[in-house]
Every structure is written in C-alpha cells, then in structure tokens.
Length: 146
Ligand code: SF4
Ligand code: SF4
Image: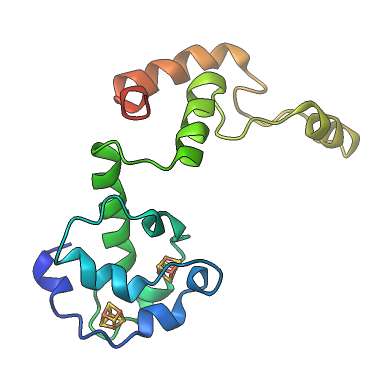
C-alpha cells in the first residue's frame, strides 16, 4: 500500500467500529492506522490481534487497504525479529513437525472413530517432513523464527 493512501485517513473510526477482534482484545485499528504514519509500531502486540477478516478494509470510506497494511506491518515486524512468543512457538512446531498445530493422540483417535484417517499432510506422509523442512530452510523461515 502507498503511504499516501493511509494519509487520507480522517480518523472516522469506522474500522474500529467494524472490528470483531477489537471487541475482545485491546486492538484499536483506527489507532494502528494513525500511529503507523508517525512511528515504528513493529513492536506493538496489538498488530497480532487482527484476524484478517477484512471488515475494516471493506468498510473504510477512504478505501484504505487497512488489513493489507496490517499484514505488511506484520511482515516488517517479523523481519526485525519481533514475533510474539506464542507465535514463535507455533513456528517452531511447524519446523519440527510440519504442522503448526500437530494432531495429538487424543484427536487422532477421535478422527479414527468418526471415519477420518490422517489428513493429507505429513501426518499421512511422514516422509514429506524432510521436504517441508527443506522448503522452510530455503525460504529463510527457520532463520526468522530462531
Ligand atoms: S475507516 Fe478508514 S478513514 Fe476511517 S479511521 Fe479507519 S482507516 Fe481511517
Ligand atoms: S481485518 Fe483485522 S483489524 Fe480489520 S476488522 Fe478484521 S480483525 Fe479488525
């Protein structure tokens, strides 16, 4: 997104009023937009409270690509090594197991009981884990979450 677009924000608050996440967390998307043009907010934990539902982007009267901007801000934060501990943990799971949230024994048993086998992932094809690790390494993902 061009920074000139975000400068057209007139702080109407439609984004905040439309934000489902803001009802349950400290996320105030109007404030995120405002602060992002003034300072480095890559360390803001609220950046990670957005569920990327796109409500704000669809409703912004200035057609500012609010959600896309949040995603861009997150990417910049990650490049600076600013990842929430919980997310870092999930990333490590992905590197280790090929799944962000691997299926445990209890849920594997439930799946079996209702006629679902292992999903079409490394759970079913454990030999693919080597390839997953290779991709994550070649993209630099493993370095980012160290
Ligand atoms: S809805 Fe758009 S114009 Fe209104 S505060 Fe949010 S980003 Fe700014
Ligand atoms: S995309 Fe994110 S910031 Fe925008 S309304 Fe949805 S949860 Fe809120």
